[in-house]
Image (cartoon, rainbow, N blue to C red; front, side, top):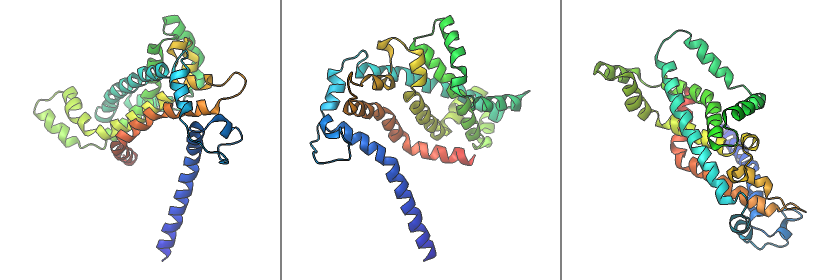
Length: 278
């Protein structure tokens, strides 16, 4: 009976936390499907409730920018996809080296990489801004891709290094005896066994890059190059804030990362559990 009471209490606390977590999204969704006159005094008031998709139609078809909703989403994909693939590939090579090989200053170098994780982006924005301006990468998607990739490398290396150390070394040794090179072992044995970890990291990195606002705000100035997160503040009305437009655009913007997480959920949970144990 004591165990059952404890379980019930834990479940009640979990449901309460889930409700608190979902409530802002519920407010956002209700705001997006109601007319502005209905939500002017609060989305939680239901004296009038006439669901409509006018806000979605206005955001997608009527408000043509620059940038339009479609262009801003395309720009977000152009930046987010390479900024996820590039650091995962580079970091996986580095993490495999840290996990399997011994070389001079290995531990010191790894410690330096871990320390870089704690470096706030705000501390290095100005030097990076002047550097990008000097090399011609300012106000370009390529510059933002390289920036996101660089900031993603430290934590991805840490995660993958911990995961690689949980993999059985005997499989790699058997392949090495058969004449396989280090890169072939990495590419054909280690990477296939690391799909859960790679999927977990891909979901996290894509979500982080997609939702970025600070870097995009500072390093992208041309309207046609702006991403979806930059579009949201631009949807404010001239004389009053169109919360229904902002809510609809927010819902549209959050769909891609939610879909990525849903598709990778199976591997995501497995990878996170293994990395944590490792």
